[in-house]
Structure formats: structure tokens, C-alpha cells
Length: 270
Ligand code: PAF
Image (cartoon, rainbow, N blue to C red; front, side):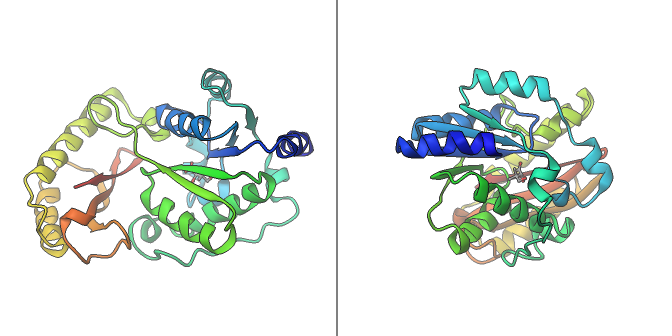
């Protein structure tokens, strides 16, 4: 941290603007989009890699989360990252392990199925924002509920910080890049692609003027016919407040499904 801080002070003295991309490593093309945007907007870009145990609600999930340090280092240098910050658990949590409780967008979507997950996310971000006093911070729309929760958190606690959201990067078949995709077998990827494509077709079959409640009835009929091992949720919600109010034109379809043990989430603009 002290090494990092000497760089940060030098940057601040030169009035450089700093963009920050927090990650848990296993970097992929989705992260590259965030880094690219930060490089465009700022003089310097900092990426952090920290697999934050406090946001995992299962020890197994934490232990099996993909880690590939060597590749991440190459990735950062290829993507012109200025500083890679990879703190130890002690550096982040040694002095204070108090969990900050998230109070926004509670008991819905991922918060309902991953109890305490978002508490862990804002707890670690609170630490990282205090260490790295950047001007801007970058998050992907793939984790849309996370984005909304962080937006509120920043509004309340870090008014000087600008949050920039970046649209989800997808592969040719349309599935979102995610570190968890690395855990899928070839067959599971093919099944997931086919699920994604059918979901896209389902979306395209709906009128944008349809109200969200009615669309969710249709979503239920659609999803029971799919071959899915386990489903947490598959539902339309309003873009702005994640409620069930409004029509499809201002909504997204949110889902969390399992392929084997791998939990996959996405949200699709209607
Ligand atoms: O989205 C992630 O990778 C993590 O939740 C984050 C924001 C880096 C916090 O650990």
C-alpha cells in the first residue's frame, strides 16, 4: 500500500486524473472494456485484483473461484494498465473487519439468493476507495444489481467519485464474458449458448408496450420449458428502481441459472 501511495501522490501532484477498475482477477474481455474506457477517460488507470472472501456466501465457491495470476499480469500489460494493485488479505482487513450492511435493493434478485453478498462487495469497495482515491471508478452492466447498489453507496459516501458504467461485452454467440465461464465444460457452454439464444428469441417475441407484470407471466411459461438444472430467478424488472412497475420498454430481463455447479447471471435489455 505504501508503494502504491507514493505513485498516487506523484500523480495527484501532477494533477493526473485516475481511473480505477476493481476486479477479482481471471481477467477477460469484459474487463478489457472497462480498462479501455478508463484509459480513454484518464491519464492513469489502476486495476485491483482481490478475491474478496467476504462476498462469497459459500466456502466452496470462494475456493473454486478461477485464479490465474500469471495470465492476469500479461493481460494488464497488454491492455496498458498503469498500476496493478494486488493487496493481501491482511492489507485489506487486518485493522478492521467491520462489515458494512447494504440497505438498497434488498431481498430481490441476487441479494435474495446470496445472503450477505452485497455487504461483502461494499465492504471491500469501501476499503479500496479509501486506499485508491481515484476520480472515476468503472463497473460493468453485467452485474446490474451490484452496479445499482454501488451507485447508491457512492452517492451516500463518496460524492467526489464518479461511477462509470460500461455495457456488457458479449462473444459472437451473445453470451456475456464472465470469469465463471472458465468453469464450464464445452457441452455446458454449448447448452448455455443455446439457452441464451432462445431467451433472445423469447425477448424479441414480446411487445415493448407490455407491462412488466404480464411479461413476467410469459417469462414463467418460457422458463419452465427450458432444460435448466437450477434456477434462482428469471424475471423482468424496471431499469431504474428494479421494481415490477412500468412496461418492457424501460425494463431488463434478469436471470441467474446454474449449469452444473456454475452459477451464471446476466441481464438483457428489452
Ligand atoms: O464485480 C466484481 O468483480 C466484484 O464484486 C468487485 C466489484 C471487484 C468487488 O470485489
